[in-house]
Image 1 (cartoon, rainbow, N blue to C red):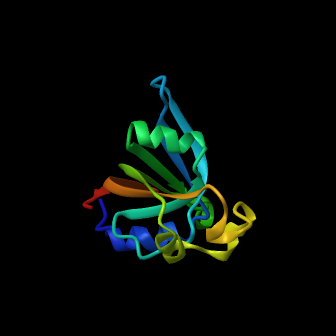
Image 2: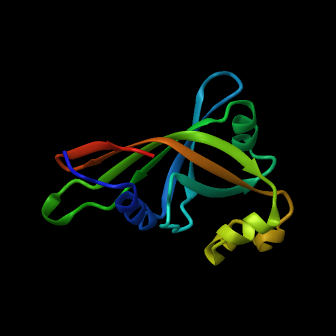
Length: 144
């Protein structure tokens, strides 16, 4: 076991381009999709993702806020396995443009061409309740 900290995981997560966000659908199934990680590294148990208000993800979170995030880093030197991170948390939908501006990255304009003024833009705020990681033979859970 290692002494991995939330801050250490945050730095590693900031280098991972995409997270996989899992929600529970209206029919009780699980739905997973990639979300841009925005490169935010000052993570204290919160993460933020942009979407469109009419996306299934938004209706899923509105009906059941329990979500999961997964991250996979790049492979290490000499064939070392990559870092894997699993986050369990609660999601909520944010519709405040000031909050959008605080978490906006210019690269997001690829999906949201009018920036924070894109019609139907919303932000998903995930508050972690549990974080697990696997880094080669090292694994553990980090307190949030």
